[in-house]
Image (cartoon, rainbow, N blue to C red; front, side):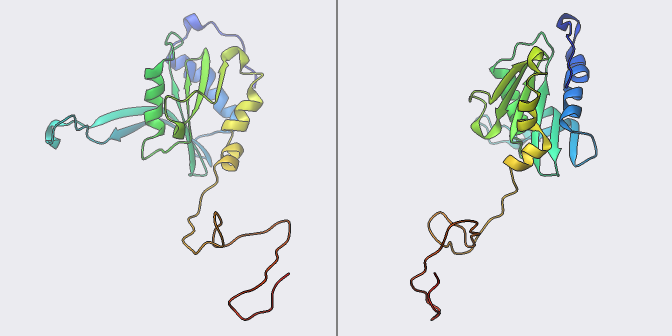
Length: 200
């Protein structure tokens, strides 16, 4: 990655997207309509807000638009909420990005807030009040490229968030699945219910 110095006083939110977010996503390996897909400005609908009322006709649908949803192998997702450089990242901006990441249609593992000057990366299942996993300024982007790739790169997402398969079989033992692969060590079996010789 190579990010040149910018004059943030002349940038707006669109500039942050075009000059910072888009190049960063390309460097991380994301492209539209690929296995490492970029979904831009996705409109999301939220359930009706029941504010002490029971009449659904009076409770409007809530809507929001996620700036970027990044998707790896149509499975693992994370989101970016871009802001103008003059926006100070506060609890309100963090909450907004969290609602996109936590939306039932998205279910992102991470959410990122960026105003150009600063990047903050959060883990969705920790909630919006948890501290960020990683923070860096624009000036630190070049030297933080490996950390960003190790957290947000497609290979890192597949490594850290594999697709889980449910196991409804009878467990072999406490904390184990119904089938276990042993890659090292040994087994000592003193009896079994199959009338077979013991295994050592």
